Length: 138
Image (cartoon, rainbow, N blue to C red):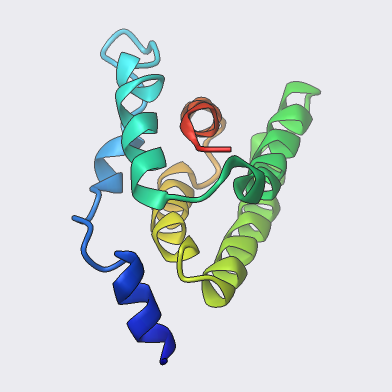
């Protein structure tokens, strides 16, 4: 059986495409994180990507390490380019190995492009990703 046939049988191609670009507007008009960052979007992402928390943990560790460095005083402009590049490479590699990661790759690529080197946007992404981790299956 060809790999494409297996993916179709598992239902990877039949799910509707999630609009991750909408999930990059983390803050409201008062510059507070939106409720959607903690409840609505994480549920949608977790249901779309269908990757276990254990498998997603390495990607989360990259993001948490970047946040820690920024909280310790490192300039986001020096931390984020290399850190987000490392995250991107990891996700691309995983998507090449496992078809289930292709949807996760789309989520991450959208977030990486939205954050750039902006520490404030990175914090929004971190909060979203942390919430996604809570909704993932074990």
